[in-house]
Each structure stands twice: as C-alpha cells, then as structure tokens.
Image (cartoon, rainbow over all chains, first blue to last red; front, side):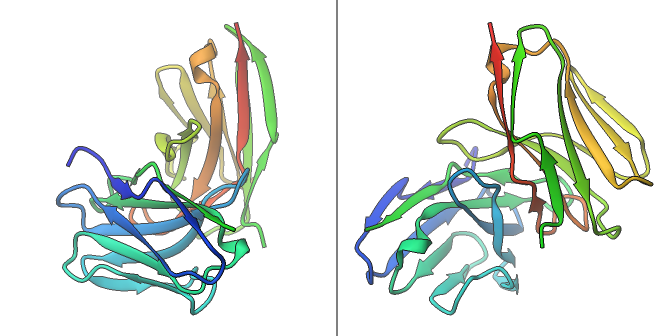
Amino acid sequence: GAGVSQSPRYKVAKRGQDVALRCDPISGHVSLFWYQQALGQGPEFLTYFQNEAQLDKSGLPSDRFFAERPEGSVSTLKIQRTQQEDSAVYLCASSRNNYGYTFGSGTRLTVV
Amino acid sequence: QQQVKQSPQSLIVQKGGISIINCAYENTAFDYFPWYQQFPGKGPALLIAIRPDVSEKKEGRFTISFNKSAKQFSLHIMDSQPGDSATYFCAASFRSGSEKLVFGKGTKLTVNP
C-alpha cells in the first residue's frame, strides 16, 4: 500500500479487557516498529521486527504486552488485561533499511 | 533517563519569522538525528535528518544545524508559515533509520498569520 495502515483508529476498552491492534506496513518494508505515545509526549519505543523476527522487545512495559509478525508483513500488538495507564496512541512504523521510517496514523486506545 | 532533551516546549512565531527548536543528546554513539513533524490525529512524518559527519543540512525552508562537540542539534524553519503549525520532535538513533528512535518530548509550534 501507499502508506502504513493501522486499525482500528480508535478503541475504547474496559479495564481488564484484552485488545489487539493491527498494523499493515508498506509493502516490501523489512523493518517494523511499535511505539507508544502518551498525550503531550514523544513516541516511546516498544518493539522492533526485522521480517518475522522480533529483534528487540526491550520497550514493552510489562508481560501484558505482546507483539507478533508471523509472516513478516502484518503485525499485531496485543495488550492483555488492559489498565488505565495503557491509554495512549499506539504508532506503527515501517522502513526499508536505511531509508528512514514511515509512521501510520496510530490507534488511540482509551481504557475506562 | 531522558536521552534527548528538547526545548522549548512551545513556540509562537509570526508569519515570515524564523522558528528555532533545540535538542541535546547524551549518548555519543547516536549517529542519526532526524526531525519529525506531527499534525493532530496523524503519525509523525520525517522532515529532515542529519548524520554527525556534517554540521548543517538544508532542505527548502528547513535547516538542521549540528554541533557534535556540544552534543546539540537544532531545527531552523525559515519564513515560517501558518501551515507549519504542528508539533515537532527531534530524535536520535544508532543507525540511519533502521534502528529504534529515541524521541524528545516535542515542541508545539504556532505560526500566527
């Protein structure tokens, strides 16, 4: 596709509910990243894939967060037992190595 | 530990003026310094980037100045326009565009007509 596509654009979850956020990267982009952006803050790194391999998950805040990219294209970020502090915009980005990132518009998650 | 410090937090400039946003970093292993522009409801978009082997890079009205010894870099927007009103983030990474980015906290720029 022409850009990085994320769905849903908005998600409201009740505390304790599990959520799944989807990212469709630009076709042919090897690298895929997830970032979390709290209101009024800069994006913070969560995890990084190169093809289907998760090379860095050092930014995942707890074991309730899980990401996968089983076929090296579409990725899903799953958050189990959501809590209020998980409320944020979750951004996905992809890159063709050494050519810089392209970000999607994000999924705004609100936990109530 | 905040590895990239950005200032000011907000900036108001008149149309036609120069907008200047500053960043300082701590880790000397960083070797790629991009600036991103973000409009409300959108993801950040790459504006311009620099590597530490050059002191300045210019693309249109946007210029990055880089001071390796001071571990500082800045974004200059010449002839600022109301359409430039957005939040700007500086960032740093260890490899050009293919490693995780460390972002500053952002500067909200307002350009008055």
